[in-house]
Amino acid sequence: MEHSEFDAAFAKLAEGYREGTYEGRRFSLIVRRSGDGRRNSLFARELDGTDIVSFNLFRVTSDRTLLKPCEMSAEKVVAFVLEFRPDT
Image (cartoon, rainbow, N blue to C red):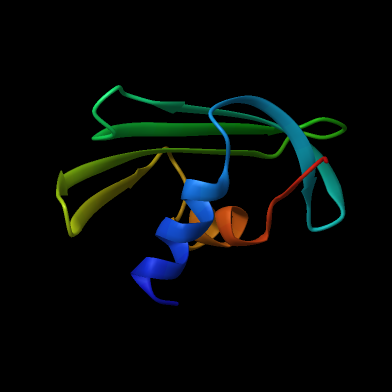
């Protein structure tokens, strides 16, 4: 997986609250971005279960980001961002 693929998928997620699906399960999702775009966060909770996905993403420079998953693997975070489908 390329870094640009993750960035593009995360950029498509609208700021604020959304619901959608991941791996056939329903999730609520909150995305927050700072005004300058350097500090970003995502928190998702499975609606009918106990799974969560949470991370902070810091834009250190224009071409460098720092992903900080919250008590889970970076692979889980990346898979969620790439595969989450918001409701239309």
